Image (cartoon, rainbow, N blue to C red):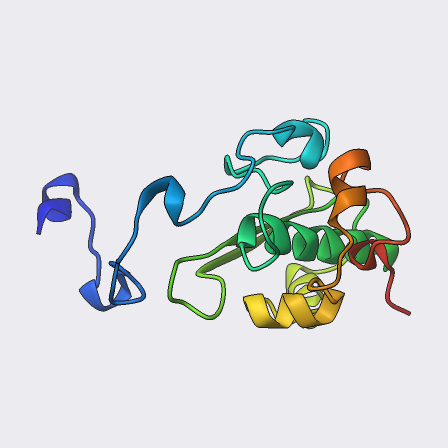
Length: 165
């Protein structure tokens, strides 16, 4: 395959191409939202890295929104558990796959525990499937007018801002 000429060894069984097996409607008609609206404010005021997706106008079944909430929840709880002083959680999803295809935790050199301890703690906090995130944070209820107006993070009434005991 083409990647061999670039020196990569890739097992074709690990590739995901058209993960759902069908593609009926593409483009903005299938995944619309208020894309780009307040994209940096929606995240962390420029602190957290973003993949380019905005979430103020997306419904919670879109991982642009729901996985950002889950990542925030995990990162806050890692810091609250005193496993690190700083934390960023990275999640990557592919259409048609139940679970994230990529997960990573960056502590920026502030880890106070072994990486395995942090990983075990982090990944036990929430089922990272879309269904799991929707259920964990009860995201099908009408709370989004407030998030669009005041931002998505830093308000204790949001379930993704809670600290586990």
